Structures are given as structure tokens and as C-alpha cells.
Length: 167
Image 1 (cartoon, one colour):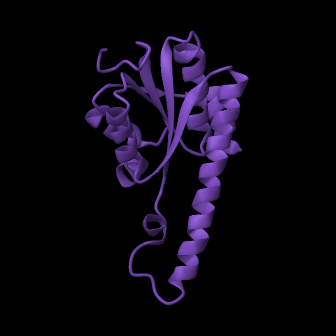
Image 2 (tube, rainbow, N blue to C red; image 1 turned 90 degrees about the vertical axis):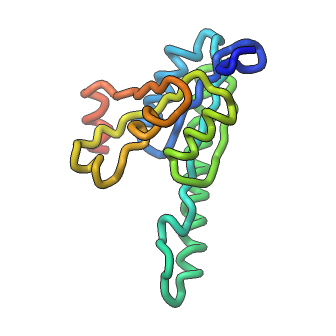
């Protein structure tokens, strides 16, 4: 069995998803173009941030309540992302392994590639400009340089992108 093939000799494709329209489009695109013919084993991965990464360290009095609130919100977001991915799988008659892993998305996705011996990692493009990308970093850019497989960055067509950005 080749390193990038799953149990039945199929290529393993890891798709990173979050709660954005960009990642939903990338997942739909993958199902229609890569995994639709049954030639790929699909693994959908959502990286759930840790509450401390959202709240920050050294928070003052009452921070325990804030952390609990943030954790509940992050859990709800993860549940929503998984449910949306599950519905897309059902609508496209696709079987996929769906994982939620706590951590920074760039590391979670690269680790998922290793764990599943993926031959391809698919991520959506948020379409950040150079300045925003410099401040926020780019998951796709990091993965393109560090994942041990090919990386496909799926961009929405301009018409869909402008609708998603105004929604």
C-alpha cells in the first residue's frame, strides 16, 4: 500500500473545514471533482481553537466564567461545522470520516495529513490581501510549505465570493 493510499488503495484526501463559506465551497468542490467517483477516501477535519487561545492567558477575576462561555461557544460552532459537513456528505452520497481536533488549524491540518497518510490536503481560500494575511497568517500558505503531501487551495468564483462576503 502506498503512503498516500487508504485501506482499499484509494487516495486519502483531507479537507480542512471551519464555519466559513470558503471552506464549505472547498468541501463541495472536493466532493464534486475529486471524491465523487469513489476514487478517494475523504477525511474532513475541523480545528477547534482552545478557549485559552481565544480568551488569552492571565485573564483577571471572573475569567473562569468567560472561559466556560467561550468553550461552550466553540463547542457549538464545532457541532454546527460537523453537522453541515455531514449534511453535505449525505446530499452527495459520500462517506467521510469527520474529525474535530482542538488546536491551531495550520498544525491540526498538517498533523491530520501525517496521521491519515494523505495524498492531498484541500483548504479553502479566505481571499485575504497581503496586509491582512501578514497579521493573521495564512493556514493555506503554512500548509503548502509544511504538509507532507500536495495541497490544493480552492477559491470561490468571484460571483460566489462577493455574495459570501456580503452575507
